[in-house]
Amino acid sequence: MNYGTTVDLTKIQLDNRKLYPYQEAATENLNEYFDLENPTSPQNGLLVMPTGSGKTFTAVNWLLQSAVSRGYKVIWFAHRKDLIEQATYSFIHRAPILLNYGIKKFSIMPISGEHYSMSQASKSDVYVCSIQSAASKNGLRFIKNMLGTKGKEKVVVVIDEAHHAVMPSFRKILDKITKLNKNRVFLGLTATPTRMQESEQMRLYKMFDCFKDVEKAKINKDNPKFIYEVKLKDLITNGTLASPKYQRIETNLIGNVEFDIDKKDEEYYEKYGELSEKIKDQLANSAYRNKIIVDEYIKNRDKYGKTLVFAVNKNHAYTLDQEFKKAFKEKNLDITSEYCISGDNNNQEKINEFKSKKDGVFINVQILTEGSDVPDIQTVFLTRQTNSESLLMQMIGRGLRGKVAGGTETLNVVDFHDTWEKFKFWLDPKFIIDGLTGDSDPGSKPGKMVSIPWDVTMDIYSRMVANVTSKSNSPIVPNGWYSVVDDDGEDYRIIVFDNQLESYKSIEYNIDKIDGNTNAMDLIKRYFILEESIPNEHNIEQLIRYI
Image 1 (cartoon, rainbow, N blue to C red):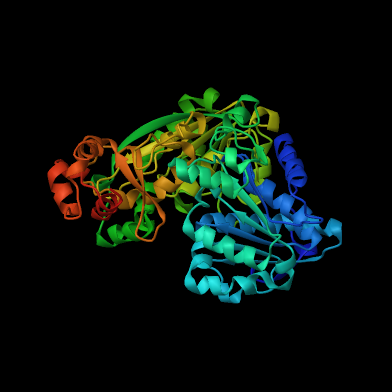
Image 2 (image 1 turned 90 degrees about the vertical axis):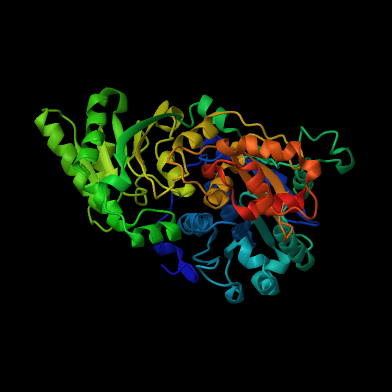
């Protein structure tokens, strides 16, 4: 489907999910908060919903029903490719609800370095736009064209992951749009609206009118007003979402010993942060490793129940399915195994069959196909490691449906972990799940290091590979970060790992000795003694400039 053109809504399959009570409450609050009938001034507001709660779906549903149906143009900004594609998909497949308002045609355009360009933006109803594309010097030139006549009269601007909105790039765009439309509506979406520096925290709250009396904002900083807020722990407590329980299974498979890894495989990993197809096939065909996966399920059948298995690749999905079937037959177990890969004609039939069963395993490669939601998943098997935070969250999220929503009380997340010398998989599912279920500490002082809260975990992981050079095989765990400002005035985090902590503390202790003549290599040689703890030189340069 070409998302950059007008689509016939009568030919699009509707995403007909019903809104949960908290999503309905969020929608009602959005309608009460924003005046879309007769706007007479700029309107700003922040919607706070946690990861896994359907924040995008809720916002898209409201925008279509309350804004697009009234002739509003929508400009949705995000800072990552996966977020752009997720929102675009959600708009397309929810858009048929516009048929209820007599609207049969709908146009949407994703804009980024991998989609359409800002110069092509002119007549779409909705734009889902990369902030990098829009905030560039060239991109800002086309904001006026993007709004068009309709947008100069009626426009809703959305910022996904709105805790980034205080960055200069976002503010440039908002200022430009506000000059063109004095009555624009500004909606921020975020899981937790925190910033690491108090000054930025206050700026974020003021941007979204979280205080009635701006003059008293600092006094009331702990009581901001949001359009609507629901916390993840509340959704787990009330049974809307399942409580994830993590378990790591060490395969004791050492990749560089077991497999044939050459220069091309290393180059592929350097470029994409993932294993090459050749290595994936070697993993898929490892009888030793597949036996560990199958035996783990059989030994814990009653505990794991209905299990969704995420395989390494298509070959692995097929091979693993055969191993499960063989083992079930040999042990005379009344359990079924099935696999699903993209392109097969009978996928939906297989999924429906799995839905009807009380246990068994269902194997797929990444995420299940459209319309394939299985609410009562008890266990997710992660048989592949990944550096993609969105993929990991999608895999875990497939089993997070709670009892109230027709799912389960708890979700077992079983992580099959291999050891690699040449490839570093920074993304630790346990860390993600701890962030989902634990309480975070959002407070910090300017330039000080703090423990990592959930709201920025995903952003941190996107930077981790560039933050440390390690030759160690032992796990490297992030401990915190320094929040600084880079050369372009943008927010930047220097991540600190456990094995670097003492070195950074020594730098803090000797901060008075750092001046304009200090260079990065001086500090690295002086304080970072262990080879596996050496940080990225660029990060130390940024820290020196900030100091």
